[in-house]
Length: 113
Image (spheres, rainbow, N blue to C red):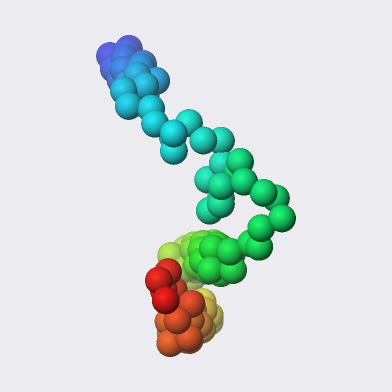
């Protein structure tokens, strides 16, 4: 048991040292910038907000929520009657496929016009 604890501690220390050393290799202006929100933080605060960036962020949140809604499905399949869990999981997936297709057809996923 001591060997496993020592190996895990040593591996954790090595990975932590690498994670502190690796980002210092090539810092540039983009990595040193404190913001990653799709606009220039040093520019004017009165510029209009990018609606495409907002739409992609909302789509990311929706598909991230999908994972949270489908997470209990493997445990629900172990019930005696898992048919209701399967129906809800399929319903969520179908709704997300329709929403994704609609956004794709409307051109909401294209960055360049």
